Image (cartoon, rainbow, N blue to C red; front, top):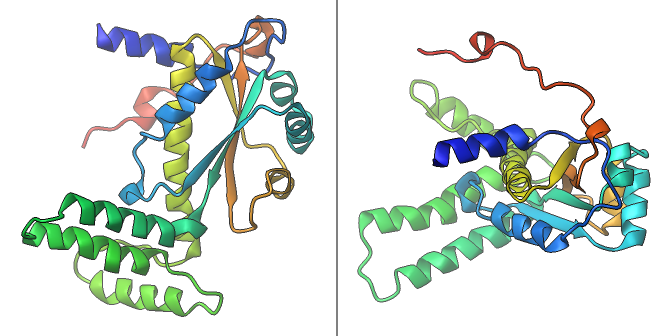
Length: 241
């Protein structure tokens, strides 16, 4: 039963580019789906993301312009902006440490417990620390070269590697959101075509924040699905080894 239910949700989710503005729309479903997105898998539980539910008409209109007038943005009942916040890694590290301290309060720490603390106190700063002069990038590159010379090792070297890691986690949350919306009978359209600098200005975000995607939500019109769903044959992308 669960499998068939999930199959129907996945089948229902399509990128709908024209929404029905006259259809009933319950924005609490969007709020609920965003809350479920927070439960998504993410790298090291760092949660370097933020989700913006756009309820204000003026902000929606401004974002529509930033999305270059795409029909999905223009006709959507509501927009949700998914943002990566790599710059908040120190706050998230401390948040995880505080949670561990509360969890282990009054308990004699085992080697496994100590490794959990070391993970956030030592490894995460090594992975995420960044400076404009590139000293930390050089240090990571040296460590990766020597430690990974003859054994598997986490190859996070530079700012680009860090960005990819953050965007992967945020995209997982976005997919959770879209599937949740589909399960409630609503349609969505993830958009990558936008002026990211303008979106950050509209949302008053710092330059260090990055826009992962903007998702349009609503009840789609039949003409909002431009074609039948087609995919490259499974045998070209799915392999057993």
